[in-house]
Length: 201
Image 1: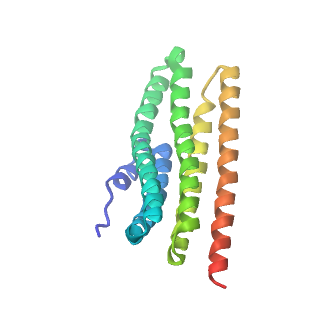
Image 2: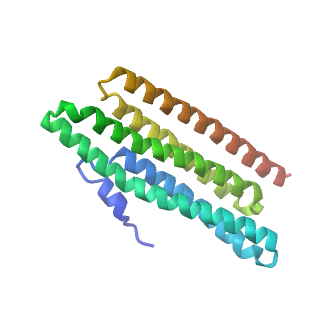
């Protein structure tokens, strides 16, 4: 296995892009990839059982959609951040609010997908073989970290919006989504851990 990763190579460069938003999407992608591994293993095992195969096939399809969306957002975050940086550097205050809002909405969409991802990981963790429960817990933690990280980036960009009403409205939406996601993270952690403990008895 190669020790090099093209995204990580880009991330470590001494320049602002890609930055924290793209990194949060990348973290969510790692979580989704680990969840996909669980699903593919279980789908392979379930071929003799139609009901189980349908369940894992449906979960796999949802993960593929999630991964596609997160990959697009990882790239989009670079574009919106570069646009925001350009507007700040040129002093174009008339365009600042829109650019800051765009740079906030991309991490918000990463948060939304992380919430979806947590639900899918929980589903996988509650139905997978005992030996794979620990992988589901790891995926859960990565997805939760991605959710929180995207929240940090989005809220930081929101602070650049000068219109107080727009800023306050968006901030309330961000905080509500972050709270919802963190509650789901705790639920997923608790239920998967309980299953892990029950299997160890």
